[in-house]
Image 1 (cartoon, rainbow, N blue to C red):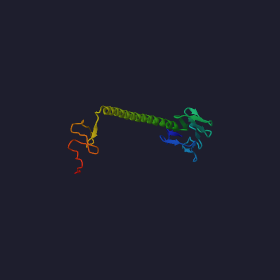
Image 2: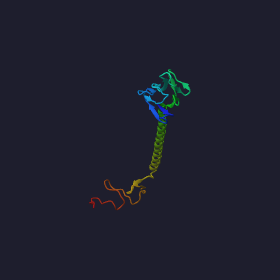
Image 3: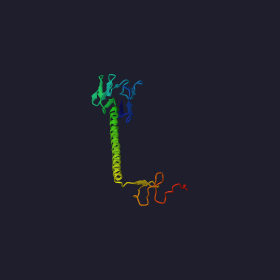
Image 4: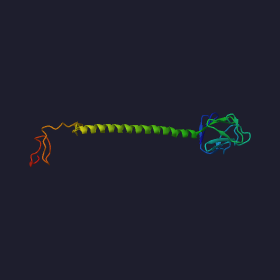
Amino acid sequence: MYRIVFLDGPLKGQRLVVREPRVTVGSAGDADLRLLGRDVVSRHAEIVDQEGRIMIRRLEAGALLRVGAVAVGEQPVICRSGDVVALGRTRFRIEAAREERLRAPRHRAGTSARLAGAVVAAVLAAETAYLHFAARLSRRVADGAAREEPAGDGVRRQRPESSATDTAAPCGDAVGPVGTNPPSGAAAQ
């Protein structure tokens, strides 16, 4: 696949993407690329894309055909991306579309690699923060200072140390400050 960019004439500025492996250029009605002009013959030239290698050759004797400064005859001439082809007074530039396609995935791969690196960095940062939190919490628990209970509002507050008002209750009885335990055998109200 390649592109033809017309540099002058009635098609000036237009771009044509060529996907066919073989294209005939001329003024004939059956030409794949029909160009009109006094200096364009019916079967002027043939452009061949042979696995990414673009070649052009003259089809009719007397047809004026040049690639850059090189006159083209019946033997094909290899065109490189950026070469200007002249068919009589009509000029166009050959651009290899494959080069752009090959560059694009490398750019996306670079972006994907950067994105993957950022994700890995974020995961590592979160894991490090979690490990620091867990280590701090385990130290507090080991020291006995972290007796936290959730309050009714969802905020964790430190529970006060045991006081003289707490009593040990026999098995099965509720534990709470003195005076809040129901007497044994009393019905709950």
